[in-house]
Length: 272
Image (cartoon, rainbow, N blue to C red; front, top):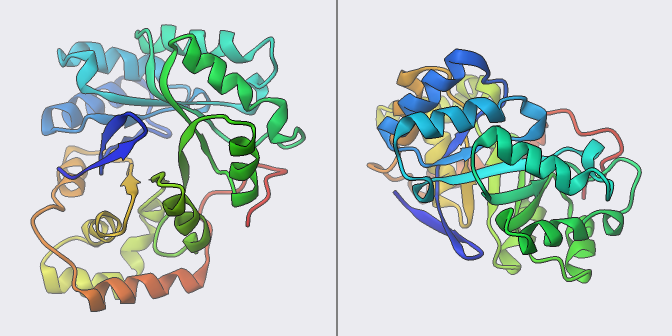
């Protein structure tokens, strides 16, 4: 599988998103994913499934160092009193001493970035995370973090063919930082797109596979689709045996003109 540098880490270009995966079924799906070959797993305090992620990782028998584990801090834990304790609580649930990537989940709806972002550096310095980053940040907010010398290495954002994230993507490339794409399949809506369906038919692939292949061929994109069945896990990871033409890539790029966001923005968040 293609790998992409994130700071000192090497990340697979494709991982597993876990939003709304909870309970016994979540553990079963994660174990299937690990058996198939997934090693990047994305969770968050908000998802209420860090316990399941930790349990699945332990049950897999795969060495901890073989995983790239991401979790994200929710804005209610951004105060000095709550920030580090909330991370330690997440680590206890995840049954690990560290996460590979620790992210701010959303910009705080009322606070300036400078009021909480430096706590990320403290978490890294204490060994709670190997690398740190942000999620759902616009260009101005990333700039604010960098001006405070916070060593962020990644931005996780909604990214799929129907949304125009060109400016943020290009800005991240200039910083030599990758983008992690959540909701890369638009919660299934990409299956209904006629352009994608036509390209899928030509390659004898599923529409989801075309979207993920498109992302892999873009620079510095790591996709983390969620899957709720073993079949979809297999389909999503089976995107390294074909190639989209320049014309097909351009056709999918043009879909960003729809500029349709699937995930509701956190109240108070601003987007460039």
